[in-house]
Image (cartoon, rainbow, N blue to C red; front, top):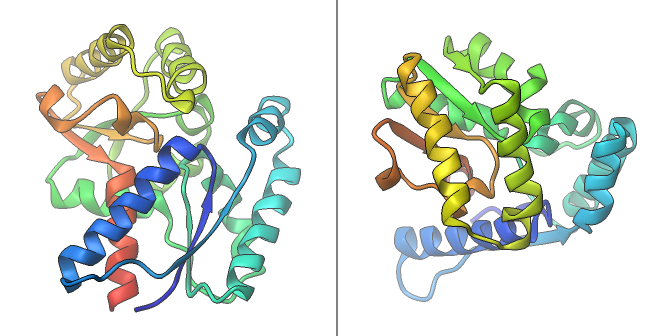
Length: 230
């Protein structure tokens, strides 16, 4: 089994999902008392969120790279960033590390194609929805048409992530807001929804939606297990 290096705490709510998914999948694959060999460095999300708000992306790229290098030095054989947004740092990280990094958008794209979806709506932080780093991978590598909510709905999605889900607050009203946004995209032809923030699966599941739901947290973790056992 290859050792998985996790950059966590972005947020700890989703990082605990990663840990649970990794270990349960390893146990399912290997049986007995098997569990995941991993090393985790968890950041202070207050610090990360403040830098994001101020647009200090170069500082964040350097910080993520330093963590990835420490994980590599600690024996990690593959890196996972336990957050969609901070995949903005992937180009900077890949310049310095010598081990693979599993990109969450590439994992999502493969699953979307496997599900037969040609048009999807992307939900996530405003950075993930508005910047091109995620959408370009889906479009250019997988030929997927990507919708994003309108500005008012993007603000709703972002607010719920940062003010509720990141703090472990699960609200039925917020779930209703998300489902309304997904319904709008469905009317525009979306065949699936990418939960492009690792906290959103705390709120939305496949049984809540009529269209295909791509849980990036689960799919990312499962892809890491497949890599670790390859």
